[in-house]
Amino acid sequence: MPSTIYTISELASEFGVTTRAIRFYEEKGLIHPLRLGQKRIYTAADRVRIKLILRGKRIGMTLQESVEVIDLYDPQHNNTQQLLSLINTVSERRTKLLQQKDDIDDMLTGLNEVLGLCENALGKRQKTISATQEN
Amino acid sequence: MPSTIYTISELASEFGVTTRAIRFYEEKGLIHPLRLGQKRIYTAADRVRIKLILRGKRIGMTLQESVEVIDLYDPQHNNTQQLLSLINTVSERRTKLLQQKDDIDDMLTGLNEVLGLCENALGKRQKTISATQEN
DNA sequence: GTTTACGTTTACGTTAACGTAAATACTTGG
DNA sequence: CCAAGTATTTACGTTAACGTAAACGTAAAC
Image 1 (cartoon, rainbow over the protein chains, first blue to last red):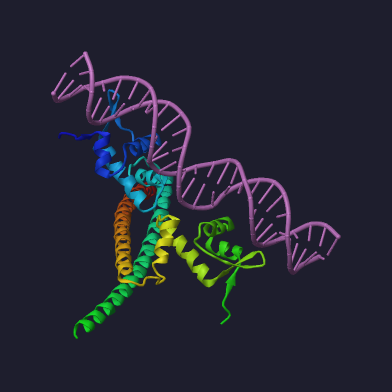
Image 2: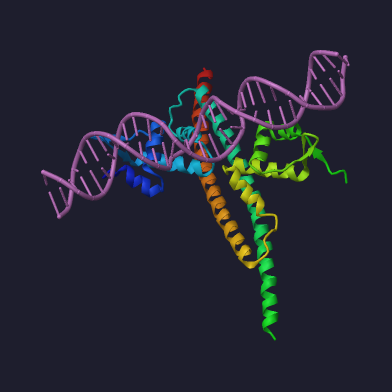
């Protein structure tokens, strides 16, 4: 396997963010790219983490929250105590996500109503024009 | 109809925010409560706006974005031009919301996998205990 | 009449998540 | 060899969304 690597500007343009943002994520300990000389090189794993961070951002999570969620995946959880705590964390996060979905659905319903009213108003306008043109 | 009104602390405790936050929303022009003497009084409509603002926050919208969405509902849209522009706004917002739902679903899938692994690990641990106790 | 509870204004402080700018290094083509 | 392009570090600036504190008003409660 070629084990693809990326430069910072490659990832920046791929994800539509600035290099400053990516360095900032590193500063905050969200990613740990290797160095080739003084330059940063990003592995596929780094790339995935960035992707997940941005996904978190899109749904309104803070960077810290994103890391917490991401770190749920790597299994440094040995004993029962940790496992139970992990289950709790996951459950709470899931509850929040379900709430968010409900909020989004509500908002979508509202927007669809607005769209309906719009088209209705435009429709009437069209009719008026048609009627006018029929003379 | 009694036309219910609310004090600032009533709304604050109902929604689990501080009075400071509610005053801040007013400062930013999101709500316009009436005054009784020097005290603010909130109508049912004010209350709904606050509710919608907080819904927006839960899904990661800024206050400005929330107001924009809320203001889509009141029909100050007269001419065709405005209606078409409104349709555009609504469509874009809807696209974002659908993206968010996808993001949430992805994250939920991941979390469920984690939960599965957890329960699996705990299950094995239980079996071990049971086996131990069978002696 | 004064404590207690609730409200107000004013103003400075704080955190997150970068933006922006300046100075410096590497390297690659012409 | 040198300019152009890309990278890095350092550091100060910025915006959003309140938090926190001080100083004051007022109205009910004891």
